Length: 262
Image 1 (cartoon, rainbow, N blue to C red):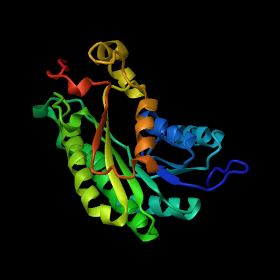
Image 2 (image 1 turned 180 degrees about the vertical axis):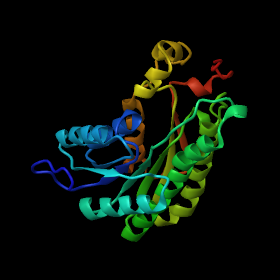
Image 3 (image 1 turned 90 degrees about the vertical axis):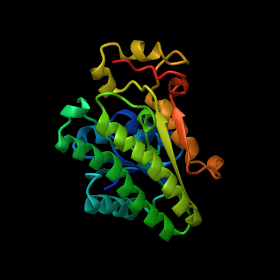
């Protein structure tokens, strides 16, 4: 059952994949603050998803937690159907769920390549397709936002699977925007720069210091920075914006020489 705050009014409904923590949680909370009801997808981290749902409810919006492997068509379609059944409609799909493997290209295991492409790229394809069909049938348009990365365009050594998946998401965004535009469905990509979350804190003992020093704005990002742009692109103010990739990176990927040396 959805978590229902008292006296909540039904308005726009969003589904955010991989929203149990990190950037996904930040997006869910940003949308709730902007008046969206939010369905929170998770794969394994049920406790984190419930925490996100409680935070959404505390902001006065309806929330729903939904377990699904985004790389599985039947689970994706069942998740979207449940969101519509329990929250009434689907107006925004945020394809955020992702994974990566740190390994040199020549040592990368095929199984790891397959898992990353399955979650990141195939999951975005399945989410776009399932949500797009619902939005088309609702007849009122909709918004799909894919979460990319600096890896959309910059090569990261030891992240071949991740770079391939994010580059594919960038291209898929543009194709989907062209095909779904006639149905009033806008599709954009938000590409974060260096964002401090639980995972990146584990990757580097001084993540903020290392990446903040080479970011033109002098700091790393936080999930709220990504949420602000997602919320804008989902709003009526962005009604004529589609097929775009917006880099939310403090200027990191605009530098003449790619900064990553490790």
